Each structure stands twice: as structure tokens, then as C-alpha cells.
Length: 197
Length: 345
Image (cartoon, rainbow over all chains, first blue to last red; front, side, top):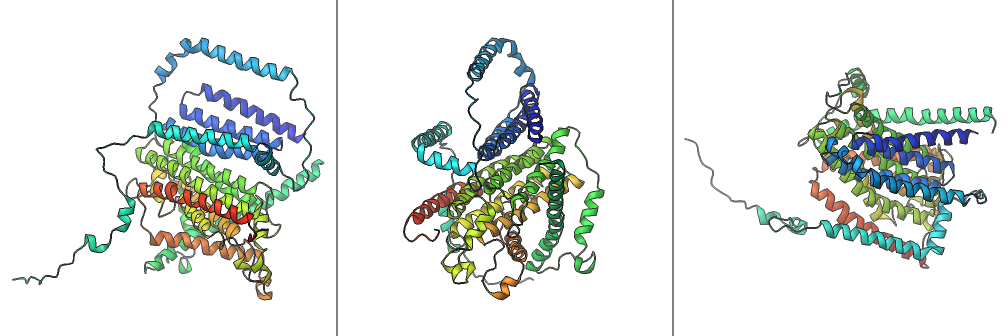
């Protein structure tokens, strides 16, 4: 009863936040609404007792991905007039993509795939996190490793794309900086003191 | 569950939350005084000594001053986000305390994924800084926000790896279990508990975790976010009165939180250092308090000792030194645990 009420409250916030992501004028506001949407989605997952997924969502998407997103969005100088120009031109494409999405969801939901038996209650000391860990590192070890490799390739590709070496810049070599001793830089000279008149 | 039981449980939880937050606020207030006193002594000064005996009422005077000041919202600031910034800052700093075990069985929420919860919440702290910096509509504030975003994201990775190692040797994400796991081992059975704690076998991880913790809380020598000599106060520059005080509260609360977590994960939490009658007579909470006090004082000591790092030095330390160190130690500990000489069985 209480959980149902919570679910509806979270769902309402989630839908509202998701709507505001695309309707907010200011891109920073949009990003913040997306953060709210992720957070409420995590709340709904917690209600389903998927605590690992919920916390991972907050940790990865809210804690890392959206921070970098904000980082980029804040530095953009966005001209709102120019952003809205393309609305009617891009509408047909958006309708097609949206239509495909709706069709896929309906096709999935209509086949009753989600009406499987309710998940068994985990016993004490047998947490969701532990079960997921066991599965991922034993049964699905190869798939897991492959996904890790794909991510690694993506990281290297992103770095390779943006890495550029400028010839006209001076770089500091920290190893050399650390190695410097006082004698290399300072020379104490003993001079006879001058006398005032 | 009927309504009365639910009501009683809620009331009990609320009382517990008040019992955590109220002393915490007091701790923060007196930590500011302790900071000024300790750094004063280190620099051969006296420190605040005008308000009350030995300056003991100084934090109260500071608090009243901040409460009475006007909160000014700059004309071209994004009003909503400007107010949201400090709130986003203090919220995770407070919420993280829910899973911290203060003594055996004394914890607000004894959840299995406690460590994950902590990581998720500490990673939320950066929003307050970014939002405050952006919404202020000021170049200095914005620079501070950018610096903090880059710095916090960098050090979170090293911190996360450090936590993974702790979780590996404890075999649990539950903070109470992590403390209990440190009370077992060869040395603990000989009565010298403190040699069984995680700090000894995980010494490099402890260093990485603690230094990353200093960077996460934007404390000296990693306080380029505030950088008073270049960008005056970073993200806090446009804030006044209680709005500014919230940033301050969050920073000090995070300091205490990181110290408590260091005590819990590496120094045996509430356990006495030696298993003797005298030491066992001291209540467990007092041991935790003592450890936290010592570690928090380290934060202040560092501030009095080290000059501020240059920005590229901070990035280099995070990415090129801490992350490789944690990765290698992760592999070493993993391999160690598989051998016959594993001390965590």
C-alpha cells in the first residue's frame, strides 16, 4: 500500500522531470532535470529491491556522466533562437524515430514477456549485489570481459581523437623538477659588506 | 505492518536522525574553532581567545553572525539554481551518515550495500559546487566550479578503487561487517587488535584513500577550487549569510565524514586497539570518536604544513600516480588472497 503510493509519486516526478528535460529552455536546467529523472528512476528500482542497479545508476550516471555533461553544457555558448530554428525541419525524422520506439515498446509489452513469475524474496545475507556479482563473474564472465574491452577501446579512441601535440608549447617534466637540488639553482656568494658614508 | 508500528518506527528513525545531526552540527562548529586554535599553535600564534573563556564561544558568535546576515542574490544570477546550490551541497553530506556504524549495532540503516551507497552520495557532492558556480553568473565562481568538477571526478576514481580493495579483503559492502572483519586475524587472537586492522596490509591504499579524501573535500593543499589568492573564493564568492554557511557546514561535515570512514575502514572503527580489560572498559563509541578526532586533526595539520598544489600537479597526482598505485595494489591483494599465506580467510 505504502510502496504503491511511493511508486506513483516517483513515477509522476520521473515523467515530469523527463518532460522538462526536453521542454526546458535552458540547457543547464535540462541537464539538472535529467539528473532528477535518473535519481527518481533509481528510487523506483529501489522499490523493486534492485539496490545494486539503483545505486550503480546514481553512482555512474548521476555521479560521473552527468557531471561531465554539465561541464560541457555550461561551457557552450548557446543561442536559443538558432536552436529552435531547426524544429520543424527535424520534426519528420523525430516522429519516425519516436514512432519506432513506441512500436518496439508496445510489441514487447503486448507479448507479456514481463509477466514472468515474481522474483523470489532473497533470504537474509543473500543480497542482490552478491547474486549479480556471482552471475557476472562466473556465468557471464566472457560477455562481461567483452563489454569491458569495448569500453576500453572507446576510451582509447576518444583520447586518440583529441590528442594533439603542439610543437610551440613548452612542457614541464615533473621528474626533472623533482630531481632539482638547491645547489643547481642557488649560488651563495660571500661578499664583503659595503659601508655607508 | 499496521499503521501504529509504522508510525513508531518512523518516529524512532526521526529521533535517531536528530541524535546524529544535532551533535554533528556541534562538532562542525567546534571543529572550526579547533582548526583555528591548532593552526594558530602550529604557527606560534594564540588563535581566537576573545569570545568566552579560551575563545570557546567563538563558533557560536560566528554562527549568530552568519544567521543574521542578509542573503543577497545577484541580479543576473539564475535564482532557482542559485538557491539550489547550497542545498545540493549539504544534502549528500548529511545523507551519507545514515550508513555509518557508530558502535556495534548502532547504525541508522544497516544496509548490505553501504559502501556503494556512500560512493554514490559522495559523488553527488560535486553538483552543489558546479551549480553554485554556474548560477552565480560570475567568472570567478564559474572557474571554481570547473576546477572542482575536474578535480572531484578525477579523485573519485582512485577513491573508488581504494574502496574496492577494502571490500575485497572484508568480503562485504556492509560497514559494520567491514569493522568486524578487522577484529579477526592472527594479531587479533594474540590481543593486539591494532595490528590486525586494515591499515597495515593496505597501507598504500590508506594513503591513497586519505589523500583522495582531502582532494574530494577541496581542503588544502588541494583547495584550488577556493583559491583565495587567484579566484577569491571560487564557487562561494557570491554567497552571503546562511547560504555561505551551508557551504562551510558541508565542507566540514565532509571532512568529519571522510575521517570517520577512514577510521571505520582502516582503523577498526569502534574496536579498542588492544584487547585488555582496561581498554575494553572504554565504550566503543569513545574509541571511534578518538580515532576520528586524530584523523580530522591530520586534515588541519596538512593545511598548516603544505602549500597549495598547482593545478596540473593535482591532475598528475590523481591520474598518473594514485590510479596506477591502486590498480597494482588491487592485483597484489587479489593474488595474495588466493595464496596459502592469505591473512583474510
